[in-house]
Length: 413
Figure 1: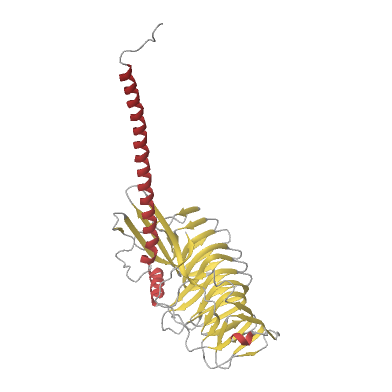
Figure 2: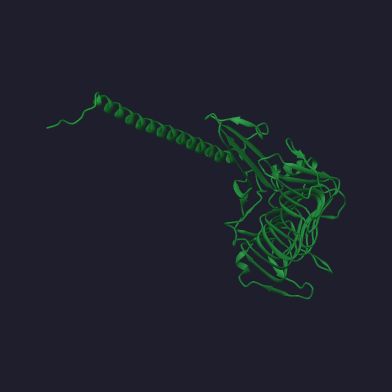
């Protein structure tokens, strides 16, 4: 009977093989643990950056945020860095935040405002004279009118067709018109006096297409008079004119800021813009301003007794705000005047306002002033329906009242 062949040192070989297999398995486990730890640390770092980025927006809108901190990198308790930038982008607040660590940077930017008030459709300062309504007039929301309420009138041969339930919404106005925040007025003054802010970069108006991200320095395009036609400008761009600015319907503007003495939109323009003028904003027929646009005039009241303000022709659609603000004690008055159209948001005038068509929002003014082809009517409302409640939960407007900051994100940029 023969015996099986044996290998010398077989046990040693077997032990060596087992050690190698165990070593490989342990190495794999160590590598898995190492990469898993790196992934966990990277996720924790990213999550920390996201938390810091979320906390940046309340910080930037608080009263404790100073000009010295604006636009500067600052170290956080976690060892990361945070930069906040806050400025006025037209009548809205622009807040941009960046958070970074050794491996990654996160950026976020947005326009901020406040909820559209759901309880106020119309507010007219009490001057002791009732308002007069003609044509088709209706409200959904409180209509604060002068003592005496309202009466019917004839305008252009048309009598009054009053909503049967209108009386339920009528209330007496409680004194003076709500005043605009001094913080907003100061910000708009600075933009009109000096559009160039620290950190802005200069560009040329000759370029036909420019897109500037909000994480980069604001691009300023400046000239004495500006004529925008056949161009495409988007995002973090300010266009400033020392005198007049004309925007043709061939211009494509997206979230840009326009600053001038007078701004004129040609017939058929369509875009999303923030506009600030010292004298007037004129909008021709058939223009469309996408949400959230703001057309703002800030007048010093000087220059005679003529009316300055926002003048919108018929057939227009504006989503955002129409603001005519008087900042000064001069004799000049301001107005928001519009033909029949569709308006979504806030309409405010320090003096006069005349609106026709449909307004899904609120109208506040000292007095109504209606201009027709044949006459001018004071304290008259003609062919206007105001619904303050329909989009109150989803529409945001500039926070122009009181010292409270605008905390609602209108749009991510």
